[in-house]
Image 1 (cartoon, rainbow, N blue to C red):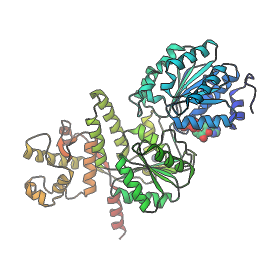
Image 2 (image 1 turned 180 degrees about the horizontal axis):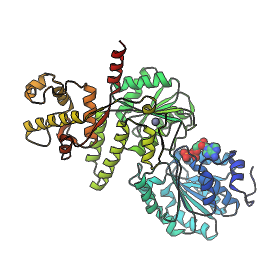
Image 3 (image 1 turned 135 degrees about the horizontal axis):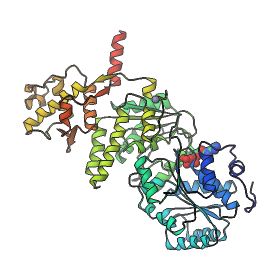
Length: 540
Ligand code: ADP
Ligand code: ZN
């Protein structure tokens, strides 16, 4: 297995001998061939698709051909550790340079690097771009011993991606300084705008772009309306995933803590993980999650990047992710072993409101906010959709597909209803509210009051403000609370209704006019709860 470094081998030989695999998967073969031959490449491949081999095999083949070391840029220290460990185990001389090394260890690595014996060197971008390190690369390059650059997690270079890292911007230097050295950039998530940004910022104009299918057929997607989320989560975890490993994502650290405690009280082995915990606690929880079976990790998005646990059976979202890339990336941590896995999310009006507010209140510029709003809208459209979730998800990444038969909407097609008229009623009621407050614009009332008035409930607050005297009082008695929440959620999602301030008071937007006029058809999913009620009644 450990052949002399000078003996040339083919990619497939390396795949067999070093990694013990019989064949390349999907696009791997083409990518490996292209990169081994010295071409630049941008590789878009989903998590679990097998990106690592796309640079590891070329690195080994090129090293055996006498071309020296491949430098792998990665922001993830844990991943460097794992990969270097696995490579050394397979008899491939690899090392990493990052902040965890003592200066003595770092010197050892540098000596191996200079000797030309090293096949692969993993380095964090900030380390790579130090003058000292660049000088070392210069000297290797002069001796023809710099074989290739692999830039992992390449979306980190783009501010449109979900994990922008300023250190990545400096990587454009690689091309300027070492124009002859081939580069391969890899990422698991990049929509069109991020992709174009990666190409531009890393000067990959000449690179061949490989886009693998983003489909993860073994993952079943389910999105449910929020209605007592804890009970919904419990049903999901206990009834469908008892004794299995999973991740529950929450939007805030506080919610992570509370949810973990609550799950543990319910007898489920749950551990919290977020950036506010001590590094030692985080490490301990992560280790347990990786080693033991049946641990539920309750986490913020701080958890997951570079975690390679093949048998995560479910990923649950209690709060809405930022956009489709984040959703895809986070749910993609389920089922890396190819066995059936589930991505489950519960979301509601408050999620829509919160995410919109986070964008509005962020210190970013208006152009950036506009892009983020567009991305949020695409995610909301996915959540509200009544057709195949996978078709929508994949089409977001530019991939055409047909209904999958393995998502909630395919398996159990939701009933829909025409909410155009209901939307008009809701908007005219908000309009009446604002007349009291003073015209088209913000009101002093939130969703609860709106729904009570539409449904004709004479609550104290309704009477207090004279809302039982409005012409819109009771005009929506035929619809359920859940249906009204759905209407409102859709209106907020589409930007036809604004929510403001601490109490999320409602207000009309310029675009409300077209909806008020009935020019915007709105078709909604029938809330599952309501559907179930109807069916039950029908049976009786
Ligand atoms: P990514 O980095 O794209 O998320 P990895 O490179 O970690 O994916 O690969 C995911 C898993 O698939 C790993 O366990 C890897 O060993 C396995 N794998 C990759 N390519 C092949 C192949 N050609 N044959 C068999 N297993 C493979
Ligand atoms: Zn489907």
